[in-house]
Image: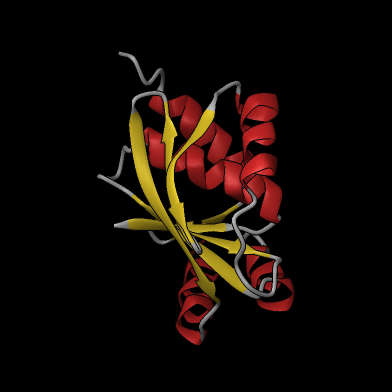
Length: 139
């Protein structure tokens, strides 16, 4: 189970400083890098860490995005198809994994692409709403 974050970079690159700045500025959280090698990293929000992996976008990514777009129709597919050349895969521990969604939203806020998962294709604003619905990570 994972989130797939589309990125407007042609090839994936860790943008740690930008991600950390946006995490602080827009999500009021601290994003830490526990380990990284190439385009694989372990990012943490508080005590919880999730692995991310970057790669060039594949045709099946677009197929899945189009299927999600057709189901809910929010206009995000065109962005993914026309501008996004790479993707980030964010590990999830389940459907209500707040940490993974925060990491995916932070990456999307810098890489300017939609997030795909659970049959939906959505942007940062919707991700923030979902994060709020999940509540505090310290319940």
